[in-house]
Image (cartoon, rainbow, N blue to C red; front, side):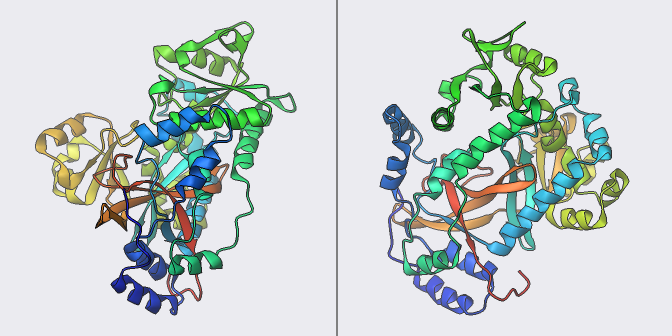
Length: 452
């Protein structure tokens, strides 16, 4: 476990003293990420926050015993200018997705279920970024991004663990948003978009074999949250659902809305049969849904988002195109006809399956073997310009460790609700790294901007 130290390392303290007077929030954030190794997470406050329900003893045990690396012991620091830049990219993508030309283009390669019209927008879009030399770069978009509620709770359990952090925290305005209430309102908004003023009575939180899912604690927290707001909530596998003349039901009880955590994005699997029937018949509100995945999260969409000429043809305005050219790394389809050129450039590329999720089947080009590359060529892959993640240095078991850092923006209808970090070692994000896991983001305020 991380060991608490009183302040910054001596080298980082000297650098921080210098950059604090310069007014550059990017340099201040980098200095804090490199040198601030103290523990900011108050685990007792975290446990107290989780213990609001008599049933939560088991939840606490899940977190402590089988998920020790879900939460990092320290926060991450990001320049406020970079937080603002990510929000602009999210808003720009929302404008593009609203274009009829965009919808025609991406739905043409989407599964049939994605072409079903929907008013609901889809909860918890996750926009994942790396911080490159020129600012944040979008790595991918997810439609069932996990961790939003966990991070809302985690953010309330932080304390200023050294004078340097206290100084930055004092300069940041106190957040006024009650994120848990905002999340519930987001689900109610989805319901109203589809059902108007009819009462929302019941929600099913659905994932494959949910009791074995790593983020089961979040499912339980959502169940408690919905219940506190007067909505019946149950957690289930999709195969437990039944669709009939009366609509969707779970063990004989009606289901109004499904909070969909499945990675069967098209609802094509046998276990998703009832969900697919309810979606196509419109007898239950499902969020996020196949159409949202097709519009936002199919990896092939990144090819269009990074192509200025394609965006112009689809009807995007020049200001939006400029934001996306800066914020979305160049992405291309993997074509066996260009195998030699792709192999030659592989060290500058990251390869991802078009329909993949959770880093499965993804490869850094510099780690590729010829055998794996041959498999990629016959698969449905994209190649994205490599943007290495930034780093957060922490002290773990008495020694400094450099952890990679990516940034997730949770957003709804183009508005960012929460920014969090994931700290890890290895090729892709995971929750198996000592000292790593979810970490709250402290946006370091900018003084006089100097090219931030």
